[in-house]
Image (cartoon, rainbow, N blue to C red; front, side, top):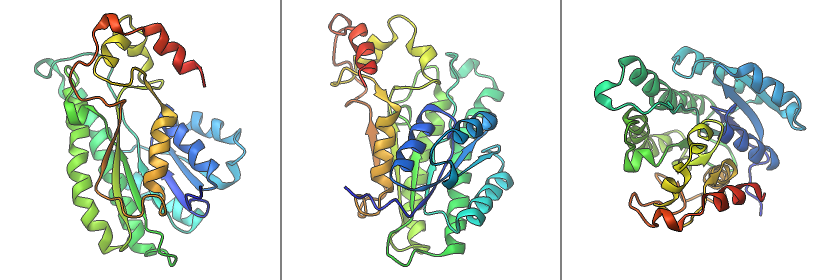
Amino acid sequence: MDLALADKTVLITGASGGIGRALALAFAAEGASLVLCAGSRGAELSAWLAEQPFADRALALAFDIADAPAVDAAFGQAAARFGRIDIAIANAGVWPVEDVPLAAMSPERLRRTIDVDLLGATLTARAFLAALQRSGPRDDGHGAALVFTGSTAGRFGERMHSDYALAKAGLSGLVQSLKHEIVDLDPYGRVNMVEPGWTVTHMARPALDQPGVIGGVVRTMPLRQLARAKDIAATCLYLASPTMARHVTGQQITVAGGMEGRVRWERDDVDEQAVRDRLEQD
């Protein structure tokens, strides 16, 4: 099925992480040109990109996602290379591993999480909309698409990680606001968000490797399995497609096995090894 992405340019932040690389591979498979953005892992991203068959239609950039001039400059470089940016995936994020109640959380941790997860996503959206204002809409009626990577933490909260929950919850208001603003620049422009639950990435693996964690996670999910990065990427492909999701905007699609924030299974009903084995099947 043609997603009409082959002639599009997509900018992806947080492209050095597990979901970011899955996004890069998914959009590359559809023929899109790529602007892959990273922070401190920029050299690693560039080395990875150099080995990919689509390297000739991709650009790797490294900058601080919370630095407005740096974000603006990245979009300028992207436009100079590819002419325009049709799709932006605001995916960059951090999840501090240590469990800390808000009363004991340092201002430095709180600010850093908000700077990357909320401010960084907002600056990405700001630069994308400014670039769209400069380029104008496409002549073919394929609207621009802005997709945020949120989290179930923003919907249900996350004990001991209130900084992360706060930052991701803030994206909901941004989506609902920007779905109105983007159409002033492109009448077919769309803004949506994907909300992953526990997803097997390098960021989540240390927590998931702790005994009993997987059993606790899937207790709240009808589907007793963990998401993979490519599950999140597939949903982003759908939301970015001007043919498949042409009438979808302002939506928050949760990709978390049906998680509802309440216990569905008892621990004895969860076979952790079976969940791990399922991850390795493909």
